[in-house]
Length: 110
Length: 119
Image (cartoon, rainbow over all chains, first blue to last red):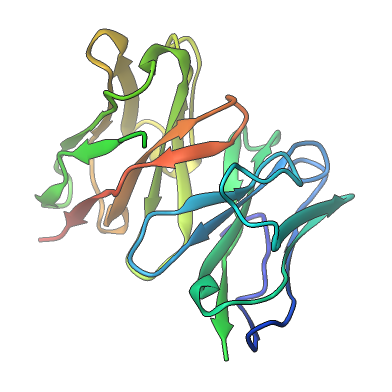
């Protein structure tokens, strides 16, 4: 059972904005960086956001991350069909002395 | 493009052992911390273990402590995961991952190797 909670699903039509939340605690999100990973069908995960709100080279600026207190969010603007997949938040947990992934959110483009 | 390639997966009976390997010939291997992450069929990602660049620091998730051992050989650009006392719930795809900044920025992932624990 993950200590980072995400909604199981999110959806939108092409061009819409979708937001995914990630709820944690003072031991993880509240005191450490948040990361976001995208896993497209049949593929390995890839990083989307690092250190709360930074985009790796090559990631479109349609993807953005934010954090406030013990929660974080990933926003996808201008939703595209190729964005369909699973999205995971992650952070180091000081209490567990380990890295934790969120429960994952499946994004569907209607 | 950095290549990370896992091997060693397969079928094993409950209680058995397997040793996973990860080769990463395309970057300065000894400069980076590395991690194993797994994903059970149809499930989410689960962080398993971390090893620092010089092997001085290692962490494990509770479910594998005492059963799995992470190690690396920087001279061979290789990472390992020795898995003992395997259980059905260890069935998963196992990913070898580079930790770019030693704080959880997992920038390169292998394609994974499947481990099936079944009688």
